Image 1 (tube, helix red, strand yellow):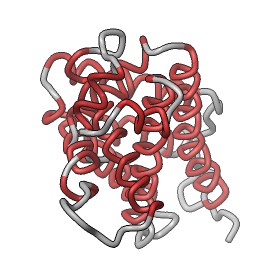
Image 2 (cartoon, helix red, strand yellow):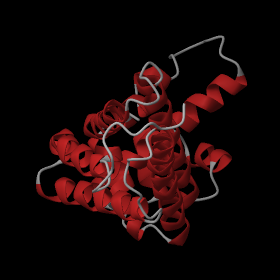
Image 3 (spheres, one colour):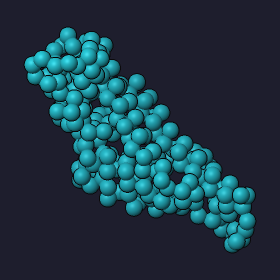
Length: 228
């Protein structure tokens, strides 16, 4: 989710003659625009950012911009979706080697990887957590959907935990929406007060809070057998 990488050398076209296909050129241009919109929005705010700012940051023409995106909002939506997809891949790579019933490790590693990705790209972190709230109803709707999907991950972890061990406390499903909403507010507060580099420091608090949902319910009989 590194906006500087998205907008710079890895996707920058070589100077002079090259053998890139039209599809390669279009992908490079789109990637540079996506990286640029995150940097511009972080620096100027969504409301004050213009298409001219974005094309200047991406080093492409206005004509090229409109070949890829209808307007600034469409470009920002694409950047949002790309960042979410990149993080999802990163989380999957981190969690694949971890046992499915190792709840502490899966929760801790999920937050560690997620917060590290945000800290690595302060422009993206600011744009996606701060500016999306004032970027229009479609961005707000997209943010809500992503938060709900993240809450679903924890709901599923908890369902599997109770299936494996009925002593795990019951939790109202909506509690996980509240939990993810609370972590989002902590992330925003950290961005405002300490900066993106401090985001990894939130991992212990996020993990400890989540693990409360996986504790044994009061009065649960120790050693009770759960389904295989």
